[in-house]
Length: 214
Image (tube, rainbow, N blue to C red):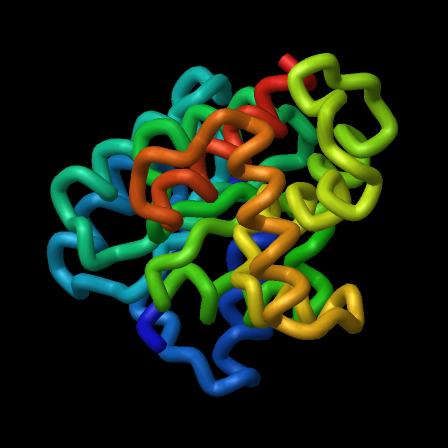
């Protein structure tokens, strides 16, 4: 898998590049800012771009802006936005604009090789990825919109919000896939998301879940 890394923190940038190289990934370039990132993507067409959410010159939302632009101009390149801060607004923005091939992960996760490589693999397959910390925090909050869901359905929805497939949810919860499919069908119906393809409904369900923290 071909990967490009954009982060103005040189230690993190080079550290992630080395980690991924040791895992067999082809790191085709590293960038200090959005401009360098876009140049590298144009030249190398990577499978996934890892993008810091805050980069020069203003250190505000350059990463999100760059991620949106890359997904529009290079749809074959997935984008994983990295942040020091747990803020569900960014995850919602990514999912609303690009429900496939985009993700949001806390920077502290990148030192966990298994978490990082799992996220990259899922993004390359066109899935979405949301940091489990966001989902875990939302699970502790009251949500009127989700009040009709059972505890198990909320648990399943939490995993959907992470971008997990039915198979992955089945393995995580030690349930049969048929049981998971039933839970998914019931919770989508309770959220009023019945009249569209399931992939689209799953994204809408994840958005309903994530918006509850904004």
